[in-house]
Figure 1: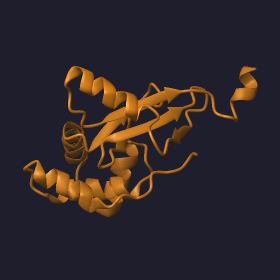
Figure 2: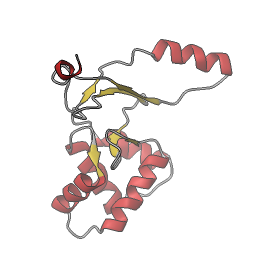
Figure 3: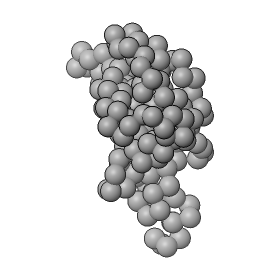
Length: 150
């Protein structure tokens, strides 16, 4: 089923930031709020626009520093729907995210569950790894684009 990211509760991400020892600055809180209010996959340009709607005093450089920090803490991850620019997605508390991208129209179909979770757990056990999360990106033509491929 295709759907937008349900607006997650910001407190989960605030807690993850705080637990990692980072102060809850205005810029960090505003970027988190913007990410929680936006649909699941957003470019930095969309995030910047939303941050400026929320608080015009937060500069571009601050937003990019916060995005880098959130990536380093695995709160968000970049995905590459099209080759031009990454889109960022908030990682759920369990750290698992899966979607399918149409290579023709770039439509993103979010998967409610990851079909590989069981197998990834087995692989992690085999290698003695404690998985903290993953992003699964599958590529396939959506129902709208399939007819042109036949």
